[in-house]
Length: 468
Ligand SMILES: Cc1cc2nc3c(=O)[nH]c(=O)nc-3n(C[C@H](O)[C@H](O)[C@H](O)COP(=O)(O)OP(=O)(O)OC[C@H]3O[C@@H](n4cnc5c(N)ncnc54)[C@H](O)[C@@H]3O)c2cc1C
Picture 1 (cartoon, rainbow, N blue to C red):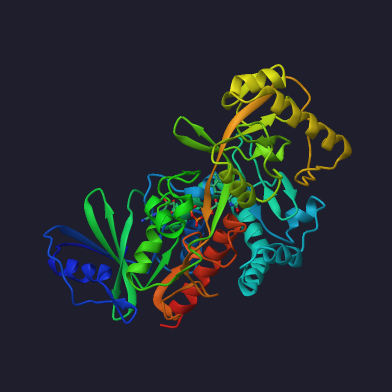
Picture 2: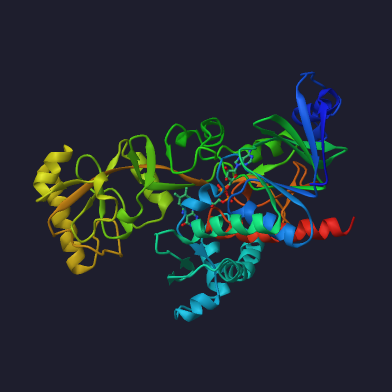
């Protein structure tokens, strides 16, 4: 930190209040003032990064390695965000994939990304050109041991069961502190400071009060808005009020701060949903394995309603249309969630009775499914990946609900990670990476995309600071 001073806040607050004033020519009106007499501290650094999840930790690391001082602001007491909850890192052409005999090429990843309507080919190419390099950097620099690959999906599960993304954030947090990134936890950013159309810092809050961080560049990396009911209501009202697997901190703060200074947003109505959330006494658990390991989904009448292996969003929408929760039905060979969530029975009839479903209907559904399994042909919904015949006692049922897994839209950025204003021009000094942005990949591979674009974003910041 280059300097630290304490001041009585009147003059400083004048500049600050301008951040939330109504936009004029796409940028806020700096003439409006407010007058709270609170104490404000001021600090100066080179770059402020907002949010210490995958994208923010990565951006902070590369900015610091590029020779610039960084303050990394984190709202929670711990780093990691939703990245710490995730399962895999998606990449192509890595030595890890090669070592495990899986050849997944750059073109394979581009083709996969372009399958989703709305994906931008330039962003898809940029990501695919850099995802492998980023995965190899993570593995080599942080000492992550890859345990399995499946096409583009790279998994690493350590002896404690900690997955690749959670290992990534805990190891990179430690490394960042070692190299001198100034991490401030429990220090949420609340607004951006803008002077003459350029971002010059961030207002944040810590236990002592307000802090103004003056900087030459600010990187937004504060994640999505799946836990902000007001924003869901505004952009995707049909999914407001439901469940989400995200941390409570995922409230779109970066989007709101950027909008307040005239940034554009895009694809805000695009979500990635998840059909298999379990309500564990108020805590939402994602139990995706109940589909992948061979279970079927039935409605409360005991009938299937979708190809369980269709994409997350398709199955979630079909599940929402039934107007109630569904049940994942599994047997002893396919139980793929914490058994404490499951109702157990020795027969399908008994299971149906225990969960309040008509036994004859559920029995018919399972009998039909066993025939589809035997013929490897799902006559109703065309499911091709049928791993379990669901015929081995005990049988299990878990009530599951659809909900918001992550948000796809956010602040608009260009290929250099610069945040754009509503006229499509970069806002000087403001950059973004991760779920806070609309990276035009339509929600695909967000862990790898956040970390990869976090790295690229740091490169753009360093280039721009060099030119000063
Ligand atoms: C249960 C679950 C499983 C998933 N599985 C996968 C998977 O296997 N593969 C995959 O690719 N994706 C997966 N995803 C999605 C993926 O994890 C996220 O989209 C991605 O990790 C987001 O990264 P990020 O760095 O942008 O945000 P985050 O990791 O969420 O980090 C944002 C950080 O910003 C902080 N923050 C928020 N507001 C402020 C503020 N005002 N000031 C300071 N800090 C702030 C937050 O506390 C958080 O630490 C999963 C998501 C969930 C919830």
